[in-house]
Length: 456
Ligand code: ADP
Image 1: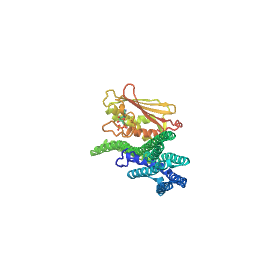
Image 2: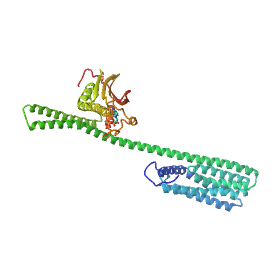
Image 3: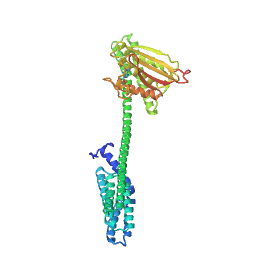
Image 4: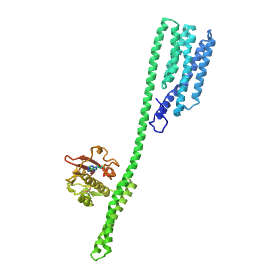
């Protein structure tokens, strides 16, 4: 593993190494005090057992060295708050070197024990040395398993010292003991490496999962901004139409008033009435938006989808005529009343109509079929065109914000439509037509008490 220049990405190599080292150290830190106490205790036991032996001085010196190193490591660990250990990459690397250094120092002391004393010890003393060495070898490997080089630096010298002392004795039984010890040591070290690998994998998976979670959060945040952007663009679009119409009415009135005649005056009045209605429509949109922002839900009233469809066709008549598109209506739904925000549903219909017109640009037979039918407690609207159909590559992300294949498109129409339909408890989708073009459909829940109170 190589350390790269540190950066802030949670998935960066340095971040992963840091997290791995923090885990390694926290595993070691949990057991260090206990193992250091075991070192001190075992060394004291051996010094006591050697008290009346000829090698007493050597044993005392050896024991003093072990106790000094273990006490140092114990006190050092105690004075550090390891539970919140979060090392920087370079200091954590120094920490690994230090751990390996302490392990090698203590391991060498225990490895020296059989070399120094085994051949002079009594049978009981030999047994004690064997027990002390195997206990330290196994215990050390367990505690240092998270950092395999440290485990090897500790257990390796003990195993080697024991092998050398046992083989030097020339005894057949000791030779067999050496083989058993070698097998146990190999199994132990293999387990250490497996544990370390597993730990590394776990940390990596965890870091990746955390990073994905934070990416998702960032995406959510971004899509929130997108939705706001989409809303603003959709609103601009929606307001632009009545304003343009109002402006056309005012311009016509201005022209008529340049040479006022008695016939012109009623026309001027009608035009100004038209302008006033369009401006009132803008006011409606702004009111509904304000309601939506304050209440978090569309303002709803009882509306009939069949009449909204007819209205949308009327409002887009000029665009349909200019594009030479024939419109067929199949408004069969008998229960077409829904609780809905009239302006928003009109906007969905207008988006679907405009998209259908755009999709038929290069096509000779241009027709749109709009159907309104009942399906159980739902009312479904289909807008089918005979256009080029939806590009294969964009089908998956058709309703995503800012997805557009048009040179001047904004890619907000369908995203907005989906938000609106879903906010009304419905669903919107697209299906390619068998012959040509595609059908965009949406369903809304029928209003159950609608029969009596028709408001549109
Ligand atoms: P825009 O119209 O600004 O591109 P929309 O969200 O309304 O944004 O549409 C997104 C894309 O979906 C369009 O660019 C187009 O590729 C595709 N699309 C929408 N309606 C149709 C349709 N009736 N036929 C073919 N493609 C369509």
